[in-house]
Length: 366
Image (cartoon, rainbow, N blue to C red; front, side):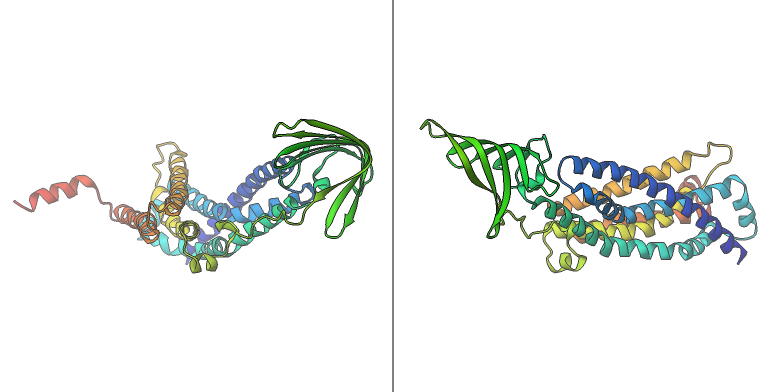
């Protein structure tokens, strides 16, 4: 049908343009954030692009939903401004007749959004978490940058050295500050090298000085050495196996319905349900008066999008803290939005106004 094909072609062009713009913006913001994490030592600088890719992949459900919403609002608003909607209405096409072609265009996008939210989102978070944990479990000497003080993985040592070799197996001008249960030790040496003994790595220092300060008030002891060994990596410094809720699969969240898992599950299901509601909302907020400014309805649409997604985040927080029920939240927020959008669409389709309805209600008792 000409009506359906015309709308779908313009929606495809608008959706593609919106998607490219939004992905570019998100990639730029994610790159800046990832570089900041790499500068703080949370992410391996060599894996910045991988972390950025996983992060953008996790943001794709929101990006696709917003792109679909903007494309529908923009297309229908243009048709109102150019009086094309008047022509279609004169041909007997009501406002509700837009729902079928819009869902005909949107259902593949909605399916991809659900797949990304339920499957790809936890997988991308899991991959990112593994990259961070693997980089966090690296050896203490691998953490050290030349000329910078760096804390060890356990948080009990502070290192400083100038690295000599590309493989980081030796160094010069070494400084190590260690805090143990009842004493603080400061060790300095002219040079040192790394050797692996068993499952641990040791830093063998040469020509240095060792200062031990007892925290119990027993005094200060200074000693000099020609050779001294200290362990710089322990294999028991492994992050716990308990992964965050956002990195767990959807099936794992269903099997283990803790408050945090139910909050995460509500957020993922909310992304899929929000896409359906936004298609209906886009039809209702697209009505434009040609005599009024063109950007008014678009600003209102973006405001509705922000409010809706803030409700998703707020609901996740409430469910995690057991301040709201899982099913009750889904029914009130998503079911209520669907009912309100459907009622609003029926009002616009049938040209209902408040005044005549009130006058009719007053006449019925008489």
